[in-house]
Length: 383
Image (tube, rainbow, N blue to C red; front, side, top):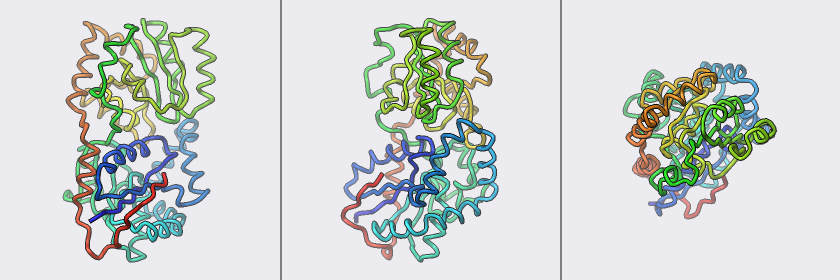
């Protein structure tokens, strides 16, 4: 039997949800018995909801305090968020369900879990909903709707939070965050060891929105170490221009500034250290590329605890203050890069290259009741 799977994702709230979805799409494409249809959940609410989704970048760059307030309110009153989203997406969501007739719905964004289940129940659709949590440790109650058929958790810590929220253990499956296949250190010759320039290669980034004090970090590295620095400013064009003006003239070809890039894996694979905010998707992509992480900040709410998680598994080091960058890098390079190589070794132990396939296997094995809406032969992917 051919299954139709509807994936509700997001294109504009950072890049993590979209990256996770793309990692799953790679594996779904290998299954002849599964058709997938991906939709940006915010697009279901029209221009008002799309505008809210797009505001994520501005808020996280310019107003972390406001973001923390939004996080706290949505976590304390998830029913309110669910009701607002339900009203906003109702017309387009029900139309979409009628068109593609999904056998299963997978949600990878917390804003749509409860609202989707509400709409299905009120309109007598018996379609199982599975939630894939895209955060590592700090889980909003929006992720955790006990009515979901299953919740896929990327960590033990996230699973424990689900249980605290009242989700039965038998509804939770632990599978690492899926990472796109091109983010694999064993897919290529070891570019780090074979690069022409033997200087320390540093990559500075902060998610798709370009958050953080990149200039200061680069300045410390370039002044104190025999290194080159690549900086990815993401969609933050203003930041990119400022970095070019302040760093390129000063350090010449030792520094390269990028905007939003589609080949971030190449930059990671040719780097010895990546400096980044504790964004779960970026962290796991760096681990998959086997490049040690220095975490330079966490968004309030959703990313709090990610740095502790990384240090617990020795995937990277948290830098509490930019002034400590020099000491952290110095210690990593002591005794012939002993700590740096220790992190790389532990990353290789931690990484699970099969997580996307395991998630698809799990979804494929969920029993679909015979009374569900019949599947279509062809589903157009709109993402």
